[in-house]
Length: 200
Image (cartoon, rainbow, N blue to C red; front, side, top):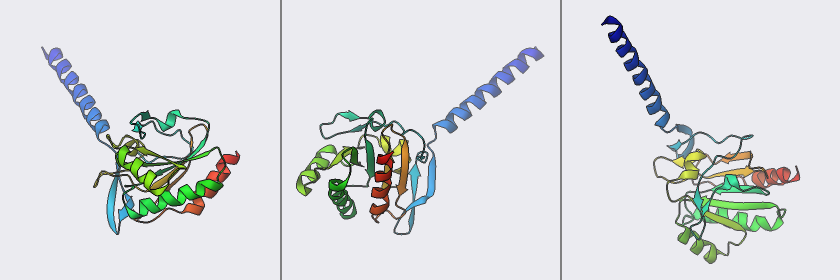
């Protein structure tokens, strides 16, 4: 009887530990101190994206609602911009500037902007602003890319302003997260890094 009771107790303890571990694993990683909005700290959901490692998998949508997985694409150096919304002044300016900069980039460098705007809104923005050298993709469904890349903002369900450069094999080679959400990224640093990565 004692042996049975001990067995039941041990099984219970193992099950409890497994449940606790599973619950802890299910909890999303939250990071603070990386991004703020005019002095107010914001919380990023997901592990920090790391240079030297493959781009995390994420399913986002193009303008025709087709699923796109950036990590499955190869052959080009890609500058991936994540922005809160194209329907805001800073994001619009940033996208226009990168669209203009694309003229001087090597042909095997692609610029992509990802936001949580609906694909239809992204298409209207690009058509209205003459954005023809930046590919717009939407993370509207569940913030898949934002969460996988650690750029999903808990407080407003938008994406942090960041620039990630992937090499031809989808390895993350450069990460710039803008500390103050309304600020623009360091364009010169991004373009210089992309040029150097493309030469390798």
